[in-house]
Length: 418
Image 1 (cartoon, rainbow, N blue to C red):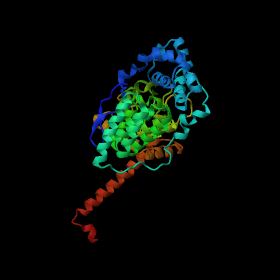
Image 2: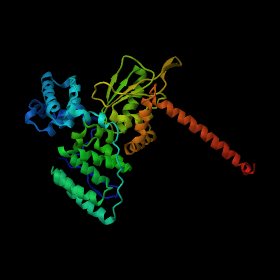
Image 3: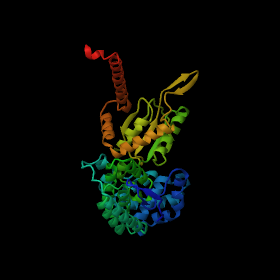
């Protein structure tokens, strides 16, 4: 397992981070399937002789990075055999991941009862729970936690997961607010089939800390190979914001600037690279289609699309995507040339920085975003930004009134003398 670079905790101490962190942006990510396709196809071809962790790593690489046109029919048959084995006989997380892979192969399978939770209906929103808010550790306990965490990470790097997580649990008892300890403990638990529930709980605890550091670690988890076994689980997607996204252009050449800006935004938000497509039928407003676990991110992206009318709708069909953006806009003629009313998200550095900050807020406190989506879905038009525009108009009216009042007060305090 590869070594990680050093990462700082909230208390300022730096030690080795959770193992095998590999970033996936751009071309580096595109090689994930090609680098292991031979061994994975062999594993898929004889799935009963392969361990589940290997099959899940292969399925994750196939779902994320495989170029379908480059795979022979014989290899596709082997992949399908392995994915069907995972779906029929694997754990719930394995079945969820296998189902996504089978969709890529255009193989539709009926949901099995055991995977109902893994597919998302039971995990659409955070379960009622007391927010994780432990006391600050004193200096002595922080120092002790640092030593225990170093020992735990060293054991994890040797794939001694039970021993490593035991050390990290001791570290957490000493310093329960350490983002570093919580993250690495979740990494270790992600590699143990019987500890996935604990992994999700510690990731949720990390989110509850509501700091920029904790939010950035949740974003890091989207790319961290240690969490590959978790990526098919809706609760992992809900907590970390990790989504498989498709972006569709419905207005042809006039929509190309917006498509480019949407892809730039998703990259800056550190989402996996979106699949891009086009539609024959044009539409005058964007639509975001989403699965239940993607509600908070739906709210975030509806805010950031920079369009006055964004419609949102739940996904009610079988797809590997967690969220689909169908871009559309009104086209008018300006100086004899067609012009779209919006070119999508703002991508200037300042705008992107604000978007990142807003994403951190949504990860730490998703309830408001989820509630907004629930409210919009229950309205006839299901248009997200109309309510927001009204809020801005009201806010503007209030500010004007406040300005007028200040102007009156500036007249020598005459208001008080009336």
